[in-house]
Length: 234
Ligand SMILES: C[S@@+](CC[C@H](N)C(=O)[O-])C[C@H]1O[C@@H](n2cnc3c(N)ncnc32)[C@H](O)[C@@H]1O
Image 1 (tube, rainbow, N blue to C red):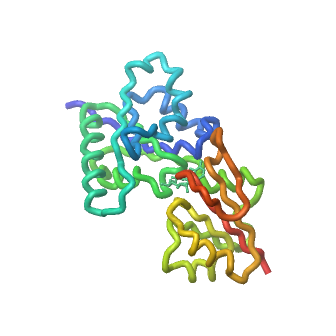
Image 2: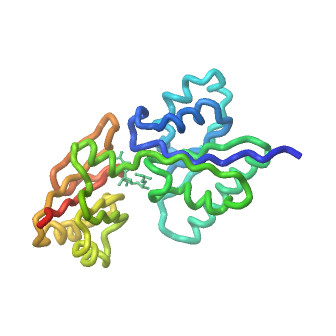
Image 3: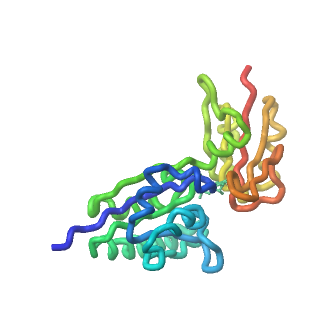
C-alpha cells in the first residue's frame, strides 16, 4: 500500500520573503505539491508571491504542482463549509497518492487562516505538521520599532469591530484591528473619542514593496491593512 503523504501548513510571514523561517524555506525547496488558496480567479495569491523567489530556484520548478483553489471572501457559513470541504478533498487526493502537500498561508497559520479549517477536516486521517510564520501584527509593530505590549499589558486581537467594542476598549492595553477594511468610520470615531490617552497607527502592506505607515486610522484601506491602538499606561 502507498504510504500517505503529509500535510504541512506553512505560515509564510507578512510579505517580505526574507521573513520566511528557515524551516519553511527548506520544505518549499523540495515539497512536490503547493496548495495556495486565493480569493478570486483574477487576483494573485499573496502567499504564493511571497514564496515565489524560493520555489523559482528549484530545478524542478516547471514540474512543481501548484494548486490555487478559490476561497472567496464570503461570510455565509454554509457556503464556506462547501469550499473548505472541497479543498480538503482535493488535498486528500494528493496525500492518498503519497505526495506531501504544503498549504501556504499569509502571516501565521494560526491567526485567521483558511488553513485551520482544512487542517481540522484532515486531522486524524493524515500526518500533519504546522510551521508557524511571523504574523502581520508583530511585523507592523516591528516596522514602527515599537513594542505591542509590555509588563502586564493585555493585547486584544479584533477581526471586526462590532457590539463587543465597549468591553474591548475597557479591558485592553493594546488592540490589533485586523481586516481593517471592514471597519466603519463610525466605529473608528468611537475609538478615537474614547477618553483614555492613546496612540493609533495603521500599516498597509507591511514589509511589502508598497508598505505605508499612517498615523491614526487609514481612510483608504487596501486588504492588507492593520491598525494598532496602544493605550498609555497610568
Ligand atoms: C485573513 S487575515 C490573515 C492574517 C495572517 N494569518 C497573519 O498572521 O497576519 C488578513 C488580515 O491580516 C492583516 N495583514 C496580513 N498581512 C498584512 C500586511 N503585510 N500588512 C498589513 N496587514 C496585514 C490585515 O489586517 C488583513 O486584512
